[in-house]
Length: 381
Ligand SMILES: *Cc1c(COP(=O)(O)O)cnc(C)c1O
Image (cartoon, rainbow, N blue to C red; front, top):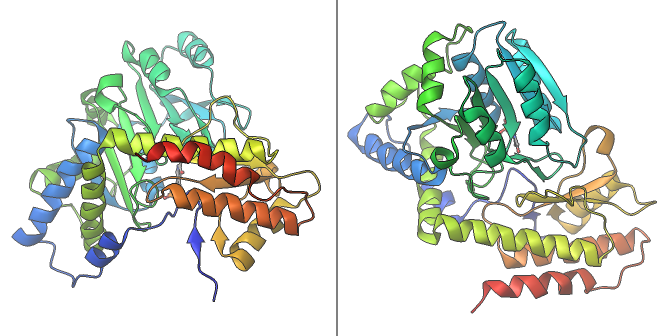
């Protein structure tokens, strides 16, 4: 037998209470019983999004709410800035162009965060730009972009800040209303600790105004229609009933732990992972602006990162992620978001030590684990 561990940046492990809630018999969705669960869940989501606005719940993967946010807020020909620092930043650009928007791409070296001054320069030169599209946490490069600083730039302009918070919300502080984030998107299979299949999105008042004049074609992702249904504690189309039962459980766990404690836990696990990587001599992919969702490290010279990830998954039983595009085979991404705690990090680091050793890399067993423990112990009285 090989016990399996899931330490990828989505999907993430699901808590037992949520698994049991999702195993409940299906109830009909147009009933007071389901409406009650839905209402409670939608309220809890506002807590996690740190907003007074409605948080729409869509039956889709996270990309559904990315696409929905383009088609509901813009018209063909509208100009937007795309912060392209990785696969998910690139996705904002591809979706925008698919709907005929004019994208101003700002390319950022993979592993680096966007410099807000670069965004300001493009905004100043192009007053017609209607939005800045960015990731809070660019999962492909394990970078956290400076959202607060970007929000300060869009605030006084007729321009929205649209944030893909799919590995940001529930990981680190992103106070939507306080900072002035106009659109915040997330998905179920990351910090929300659920299986894939739900997308969430909240819009500021400013964003809802854009919605009134947007002309992109849309049907399934119709935010106005969803908001109207949400007021009646339901969804426009059949909701993913089981996932919403699970979501309620996961949100209750987050509420019980307290959002600030959830952020502190992610911060501790991330710092421990970075310290362990350093102790093992593994260079960080994003040393200057690392995301607390996942840590990317370069695999040592002479080690094939693709084979290492496969070995860890199939032989050792620990699923992590490799790199994409030009980082394929070169990096390892260790996720530490969602239903993850101290000993998941110990498993991740010790399995990396053992796998690297098997791959012929000289490793002092326990050196990474020890460095992680020095930080992880902060989590205990
Ligand atoms: C996982 C992820 C997505 C994509 O979400 P899907 O659920 O696969 O559609 C988008 N953005 C970021 C930052 C992600 O981590």
